[in-house]
Length: 427
Image (cartoon, rainbow, N blue to C red; front, side, top):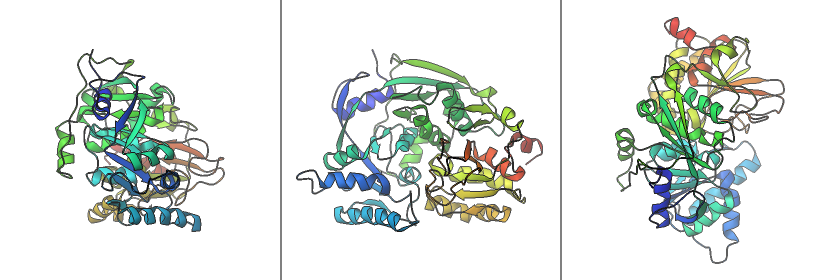
């Protein structure tokens, strides 16, 4: 009996010939990640471990300031300083402060800190993003992160795997975000709880690296422990441009055992929208647009859709136009590098000319922290990954999730709009 992709990676990192779902293992990690929120607790826990004066490897820890930065108040500044002081004390090689990094899950792949076959843990639930590169990556609590800081290993239960197979060519104005929203709608927010999602099929083979990142990022929205793609030539080229270290490229065995196989016809898919108040309340745009839903805010960015490819889509739709007078549009590039590339290409100028505000890279608006929180009775359509009650601000607000194209189309009309209407108009 063969092993799935996740099982192969975990077996190697546990020093075992094979592992099976449900098995408890100790596994060595290749990288440990924390942001200023998760690091604050992890550092405190580490201080309480007897004899734990130094991290296990200062080159295999990444610390990223991204949630409450630039600091919105004194408490936020205190958290940022705590992590910065720790990074200096421990001589952490990969520390990313404001102006040098951005959103953690955008920054790490950019900097070559993620590669196929690796085991990565982070103090953030969307650490599963790195499965886009053929790595086993998962979020953990700050206590586990503290132990990983010190020991360079974690214990975990081997997850069973769900095989998702996508076939067909995506239609006009349909993107990876639509594909993943449809997937979460199919599985449900707890349909893959503590499971590994393994992505297969001709559709995902054709996706860009950015598209795969979007899909791996939202595996957690179905409750998954991790989401993972097989590394192909596209993946390997991306990684080798950013690092020269060795890495292993694993493949699931042909006789691997999956708990469940789900097939999705991507060719018949139209743009999707997740309606309040859960990411699995997913409906086709034709249904949602028919209800003439007005919006107060459009948000583009986050670790799900804050990449240059996403900003280009929005800029193309908004080029030479003005956003509706009843909406505000907030754009957060995912990293400093994305911001700079968007500036060099004229994307930021296009967005600003249309009436958008472009923030410094960060997570603030996504989780209702700052730089775009919603007030009572406000409604937003957003490229982010969650829309639970109060996620982006007031518990009396509403958040709809959609692709950058759907968000851009909605920015022009002031209501949730099918971007294919723009396609027909030649935009």
